[in-house]
Amino acid sequence: MLKYKEYIAHIEFDDDLDVFYGGVINTRDVITFQGESVAELKQAFIDSVEDYLAFCKERNESPEKPYSGKFNIRLDPSLHRKISFISKKEGISINQWVTNAISQELQV
Image (cartoon, rainbow, N blue to C red; front, side):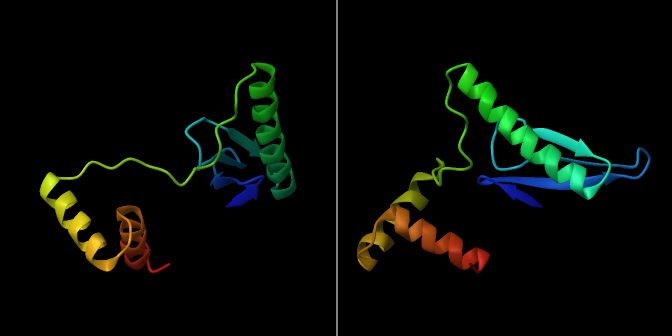
């Protein structure tokens, strides 16, 4: 993986074409790049992110920020009720309870 300005890219190698390629994985917008060497790949990644940012600026649009930390989730109402009850009992918000539960599950 590569990281530049909070954008994270996943890298793969195409053995048939003898080329590295990748794409930014922490945005919904598509940002891709490729290179024949590691140095070329890294520079192509930086160039692609910079091109994306320039394109957004040119169109007077805000670039998509890598994951804001917010997401919506739909739950069965009975599960929502249980989470609400437990979080109140623990004296924390539902958001904090869910964050704690996910962190525990992911062991982070």
